[in-house]
Every structure is written in C-alpha cells, then in structure tokens.
Image (cartoon, rainbow, N blue to C red; front, side, top):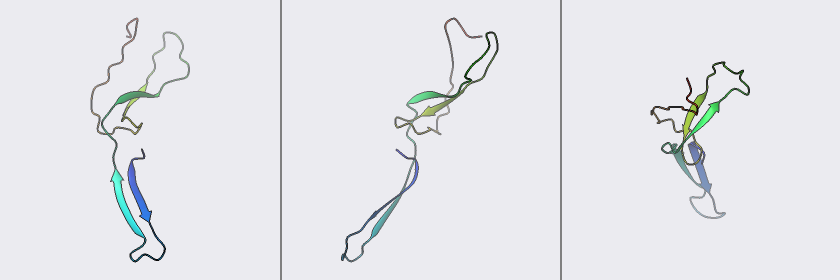
Length: 79
C-alpha cells in the first residue's frame, strides 16, 4: 500500500550469503476514485468557497498521473 522505496531483507543463521536484501520502488496505481481534500467546516449562506479534489488509486495512494477534468455539480445547480 505504501508508495515509494521498499526494502526486504531475509537472513538465516549459518547460511552463506545471508542476509540478502531486495530493493524495489512502488508507484501509485491508476485513479480509482476522487476525494475532497480541502473543504471548509462552515460557510455562510450565499458565500462562495473553494474545495480541493485529489484522485487516488484503489489502495488510497494519490494517483499523481491523473490529469482529467473534475466537474462538480449539485442539486439545485451550483453557480
């Protein structure tokens, strides 16, 4: 689940060549969902406000390769 460098070390007492270390770097998967990452706690009626949206992969990692357009709509229509 964690994106970035990963290290795995295996060792056995008395075995030649032990320990053995494996290094790999994982990256986030493709976007699977959108999350509101910044929403104000309260807003007075009739006052505009901003929000931030981020795409994440199926494991919750930020999908940094997402370049799509996000459209936010409401009912009644947002203006």
